[in-house]
Image (tube, rainbow, N blue to C red; front, side, top):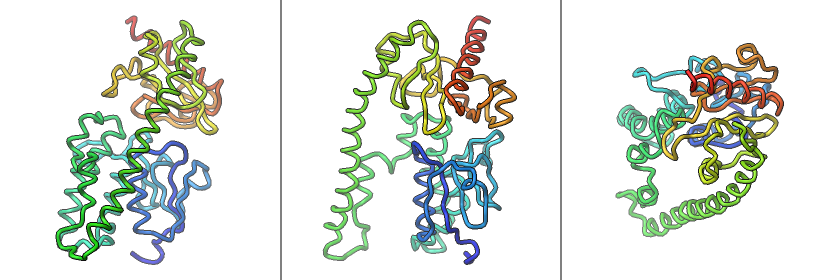
Length: 315
């Protein structure tokens, strides 16, 4: 790795985070500890440059200019046709250097790189792309079940220092506390969200679109309310607005209605042209979420999506 290749900035998106860019950041911050990690969607930051690595944002994949996104139309695929997330792309291009930085012997790097890709990286990629249910990914991610994760923090067999067990326990204690407290906080938040969603369902009446004041868990409350007529949810996110589908079941990714097929993977001007909506910004290839610049724009996208979904249902 030459000095010229060392970035000053590691750039990913702001807002809610997912496993793929978080795990990518684990790899990149180990390799480039002096680089500044920036979470943003500002165009001047997500435009490729010699001083940065961009991942999970930017709507392009070009290892030569060090941008590693997977949300665009014609998103990158593995040789077997399975989709990459940003984690898979980062692991493909930086994983070997990461293993070397972890002092893995050179003779073992290729085999460990492939094994970790198949058993750890690939399930993360598939879940992120909606190609694998988290309930199915659990057995595949055997190292990431909570008991296995705690066990993995034990000292390795040849760490014979007298305090190795105590140091490992203290390290595991911090991880365990984070998981326990996060779980309790999420359960508490679920009840707060349910009350807000039920109020929004009442306001929606017989409409097909549920408008929420912010992003929050909503499916369980929609089911509890018996609001089977609802097809889509809209809410603000940072400076934008999002339009999402409603899952049919707690597990799996099948929706009550998909967004229009003609929108899949489009961004900015192409999305505006296809939808006829000024301010349309992005539609995921999986057709489960779209983003627009304003409330008026997202409601118009929702209106179009409802008309198409109802037309398909009648046909």
